[in-house]
Amino acid sequence: MGDSALAIASGHGRLAGKVAIVVGAGSSGADVSNGSAAAIVYAREGARVLCVDRDTKAAQRVVEQIREAGGDALPFEADVCSKAQLAAMASYCASEFGRIDVLHNNVGIEIVAELEDIREEDWDRVFDINLKGVMLACQQVVPRMVQQGGGSIVNISSIASRKWSPMPFLAYNTSKAALNHMTRVLARRYASDRVRANVVVPGLIDTPHAAHLTKGDAAAGQAARDARNLRCPMGHQGTPWDIAYASLFLASDESRYITGTEIAVDGGLYL
View 1 (spheres, rainbow, N blue to C red):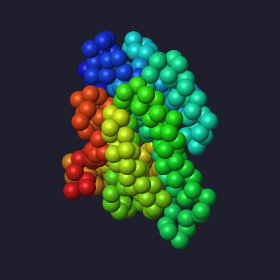
View 2: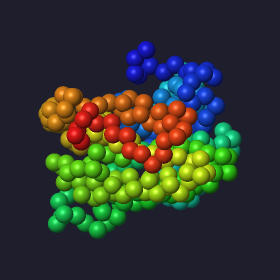
View 3: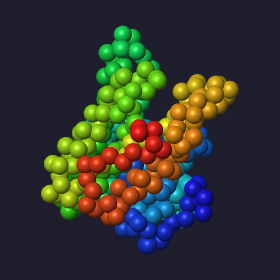
């Protein structure tokens, strides 16, 4: 079965009986994103999935893929900058599915600007989405996990949280580093409640978002992809499925004694 194939593991998957919220589950166009791949893999392994995105159509496309394969998923529109909308998300998931076992936070943006050119409003927006949005989602979901006896938070960070990159992404780099530490703090705080929190740290991943950075120019896009491949010790970028499979491990009971850790999915880029 290829990565893009979806066959629901009826009652026998690694997430059988669990409910997952994937924030940022949509994808631009037909190509799979880190978020949509995670939603699909979770469903393939038996989870019921709430696919959350600010773009309802993008979330609905992923839901339809899951449903066509026999899985159980619902779309939900929410902006991570809105506490009220995230509260509604948690309430809706609990109402429709009865519980929340996995919270997967995938939303993130960057601005391209050197230090001297960063505008305050741009810096604040990056932190609002990349960091405060995750905090607000956790704020709404973690108390429910505590009440039900446990759960798993999977936050998607970036190799940019650990090292310099050729792109001038200071706000992005810093916000993702803060996300890593916030995850560690949450992991320790809620360990006795059996709520785990871990981070997936992607390296260079060939996603629709990465392609979008070239502003739709096909030749420039391919040149950028070739350059990114050359930067990878393995000679090629990863795919959203690589991120999804690492997330699956952290979401499942297979990692029940793992919390506060970072799993780098980077083909050796950080070494």
